[in-house]
Amino acid sequence: MPEIAILGDTHVPSRAVALPDWVRERVRAADHVVHVGDYDSEAALATVRELAADLTAVRGNMDPGSVDLPRVAELDVDDVRFVVTHGSGAPAGWADRVAETARQHAGDGVTVGVGGHIHEVVDEVTDGVRVLNPGSATGAAPASEASMLVVDVEGDQVTVEVVRE
Image (tube, rainbow, N blue to C red; front, side):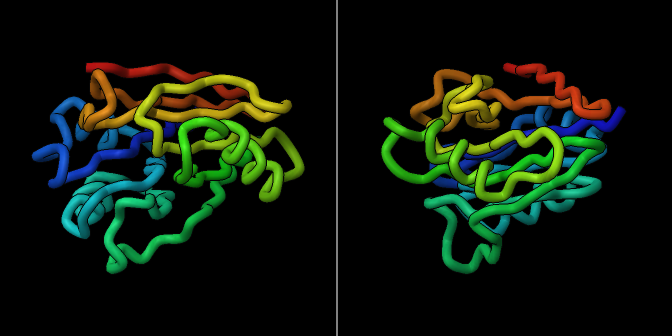
């Protein structure tokens, strides 16, 4: 069963000094890593790339222009397609934006929308699409704690664990 570590909104160095050790350990242990953007620097992106065995990553609204990543990425695991986007814009309507992006990039099986931006843990169904947000892996404001998701996929089944400091 593949394990996927989902994290984002790390904001290193503007709001945090570094990824916490427990996040680094979970990223190293995962079969695949998804980062939803807002690294905040090329160095932070390089750190995640070094830790991840395999990385799917998107650009966030706070990433410098030198961070060359797509706005939307897809990851297919077993019978599940993860559609990854940052979800930029006002907090109101965030889940709708992520769900719409997921629908636009849907696969033949189950589709899950994954976004960041709002620094809140989310696991909900919006207009028939499961939408996930890992919160902020560093606890960067406005988050109240550091968090990430660990996802297991088997066939078309997705199990989500919230990991908090």
